[in-house]
Image 1 (cartoon, rainbow, N blue to C red):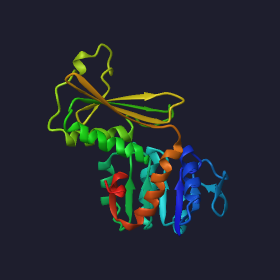
Image 2 (cartoon, helix red, strand yellow):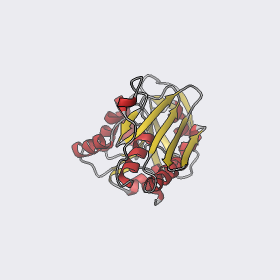
Image 3 (cartoon, helix red, strand yellow):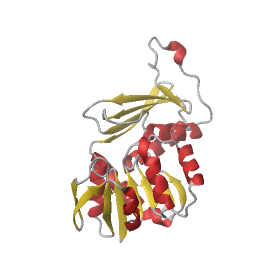
Image 4 (cartoon, rainbow, N blue to C red):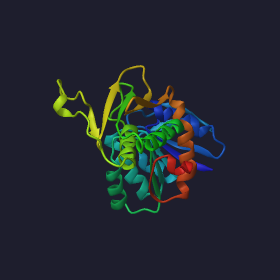
Length: 258
């Protein structure tokens, strides 16, 4: 039985994680932590779970920490977990991969820190297909769309997609840049040479379209998460697999054999 601690447990993603983990036969939620939400009651596999505010005592009981909190607090949670010998599955975005490497170097541990910009299998496939397309169609831009309460822009998925595209194409093509903007920011952010445009609206969940252009043709690769349950199979897979690894592991594709 894999004993799981969920931080950010009273949030929208945290609640889904508690439900998903509790539904599995080989794992259970032993602690739910969410500062400011003490006493909230969640349904677990062995009855109800009360949300607490202190992570330290929870680390004694758990083997894997699942974190869906905020960029401002996730690093502290991970450092405490690694120091306690607890594996980490992190879905909180807004912290760079380079920063996570620094955290691992500063917090020696045999445990695994697994981070993923997106836990939806379809999103992982979208990134993989986009990476392949970039080898043949280097002109590309990314449009990512999320709900209006998302704390980071561009999204972690868009950042990761841009990095993969940059590594796949032979060179960055010349495209219209800042000098063409009538209003500042119209061309979006530039990540690894790829233009990224962020949309934030109520009613959205998580969506991304990768647009490729070539002579006389375009190619669109899009993924839509219309419900947060789309992320749960990936979270469950990560919880099940993280204990078999050590060090920093990036991306659900590393667990999917892609």
